[in-house]
Structures are given as C-alpha cells and as structure tokens.
Image 1 (cartoon, rainbow, N blue to C red):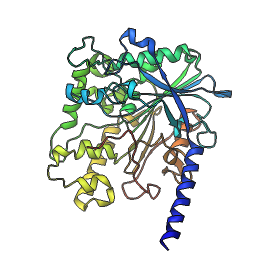
Image 2 (cartoon, one colour):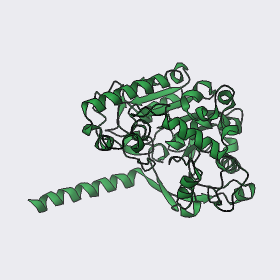
Image 3 (cartoon, rainbow, N blue to C red):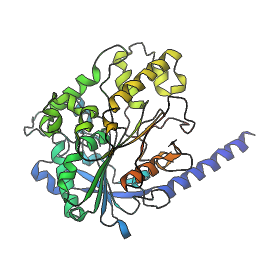
Image 4 (cartoon, helix red, strand yellow):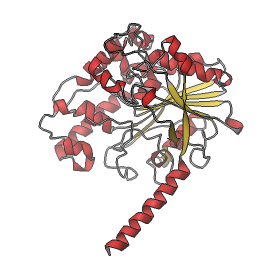
Amino acid sequence: MAHARLGQWLSLLVCLLILLKAESHPVGITLVENAVAKGAVCLDGSAPAYHFDKGFGAGINNWLVHVEGGGWCNSVETCLDRKNTYRGSSNKMEKSMSFSGVLGNKQKFNPDFYNWNRIKVRYCDGSSFTGDVEAVNPATNLHFRGARVFRAIIDDLLAKGMKNAQSALLSGCSAGGLASILNCDNFRSLLPVGTKVKCLADAGYFINAKTVSGSQQIQAFYSEVVALHGSAKNLPASCTSKLSPGLCFFPQNVVPVTRTPIFLVNAAYDSWQIKNILAPGIADPKGAWKKCKLDIKNCSPSQLQTMQEYRLQFLGALSHASSSTTHGLFIDSCYAHCQIGTQETWLAADSPVLSKTTIGKAVGDWYTDRTPFQKIDCAYPCNPTCKNRVFDSDEQQD
C-alpha cells in the first residue's frame, strides 16, 4: 500500500514538473556595465541587471518591463544585510531565471503578451527604485542609487529597440509592484509620445494601517526608507507637493494623482501585509498570530474578524484609485501575495477568477481596451477558486 501511494505521488510529481517545464523557460542575465560609470549601481556598487527575452512576430515592437520584488531596507544595518545577497548585488544573482505567467512566451498561457519583448528587472537597491544619494560611506560602501538604476536600465532598453515601442507595460510584484506605481508616470515620460503606455502593479498596493497593537509601524518604516535612500526628490511631485515624502511611498496617496492608466492586482487579505503591516512580530510578542499568518485556515474567529476589518481598510484606501475609469482592478479574497508571475494564478484552468475571468484575461482585456475591468471580490471565504494561499519567492516572512 505504501509503495503504491509513493508511486502515485512520484507520478504526480513528474507530471507537475513536466507541466512547469512546458509553462516556463529560462532567460539569461544581462549586466548593464556602462551604468557603473554613471553611479547607477546596486547597494554594493555592482552593475544593475535584467533578464531579456526578445519579442517576435507581431509583438516585436511591444515591451513588457517587469520589476522583481523583495522588500526594502530602512537602515544601514538592514541594507548591509542585503548588500551581499542577490537583493543587493548583481554578483550574487543567478545567471538565468524562469519566465512564466505574464512573462511567458506561449500563446496558450499568455495570449496578449507572449510575443512581446519581455524583461525582468532585478531588484538590488532596497527602495523600489527611488533612491539617489551621491555620498558613499567608505566604512559601509553602501550605494543608495535606485532611481539611477531604474533610469540606466530603461536607457539600455531604449537603445536596444524600446525607443521604437508601439506598446509598453511597466509591471512588478510586491516591492516591484510598488516601483511600477511610483515610477509609472516617469516610465511614460521616457518613451516616445505615440507609445501606448500602461502600468500593472501586482501585490504592490501596501496600505497605511496600524498594527494589531495600534502602532503606526509601516508608516514609520516607509519614512525611514525614504530618508535613508534620499527618495523624496524621485517620488511623484504631484504627491510630495501636498504630503510628507514618507506618505508618498503609499500607493493610496500616489495612484489618485497618477496620469498613466494602472491596473491593480491584489489580494484583499494580502499575506505579506497581514504578516508585516497588520500583525508583525514586534506587535505580537507572544506569537498569537503565528499559526494564523502561516495559513488563514488556522485563524481564530477573532483573528478572522480583525482580518475582515483590515480588508475594509484596504478597500477604503483603494476607493480613490478605483474612481478613475482608466484604471483596472482585480481584488480577490485569496490569502496570497504576487499572482501574475506564476502560471497557476495568472491564467490556468484552476486560476483564481472574478466574474468568471482570470487575472491574465482581465489584464489583457484592459490593456488592449477590449473591455474595462474593475472587480472586487466578496469577503473570505466566499471564493472557491482561492484554494490555497500562494507563496511567492518575492515574499519575505516576518
């Protein structure tokens, strides 16, 4: 019996691996060596990097630039922790990455973007590509140059053909999703006037909410990120002219004043936000939320009620963003973080759906102007297509 069950599991695993292989493909790394002379470097001073899969056929003049996620560093100590990892150095990055989901090259799995030029920008600055501090302390050799890195990569892509772009989409997951929001209008300004430009933020709509203990931790954290990296001058002036720079790191204060159309993909119970904004370890010293944060099914009735209240805060912070008809929304009730980079949640037979529509189809319909899409899911646990929470490699656990 045990051998038979093991055989079944092995067969299932082989089928899964074959499926994953069919739906993803490896893409080599490109280092922007000429950016170093401009001071456009990762935290450790190494060259910026991206992975580029060239477009073909009718998509040869269309460009999808996707920004990797991976949190932020808000102090010299936390930036030093990143400096010698792939989050802070291109010397530590893998030489190839698998592309799937929104970056996939098969029409069946990514019908609207499969033949575009598809780029994954590596995230190595810790400020969602907003920082720019000229001085470098020789004792730490930390470089806070995220905004320069973003510009250097875009300049490199323009030189490789993006200057002829007919269509372009800036997307990102998590901290990369936030980068796609904060840099959306900037991205549009760097492309030809006639280019159709939109932005897509996946799990990037972090809200300004209190912890379960009542502290304003995320607001203080973002203010520290902005101050350390010298981000203020690179945040949208339409926001910083009215609010303090730290508050302009929150999408709820930026999206309403962004001119370029943005599509927001987010879980109303975003697992990173529940773990790090609502119930971070520092606000839960006895670990009462530990099991709940690992799996929403472990949450007590009172914890679920707190999460339902968080959802309402999230939807309230989203209300101004959804007032524009040019923006798109796919807000599901899954316990998830980042859903466009994996085939399972982007476009598959068992993907999460809203109004019988997958994320991939909703984004495609919105980008191509076939159909506008602004849908907000009912409260957990109403959506049966949210089977299991999605853990993404870009998600950091508290």
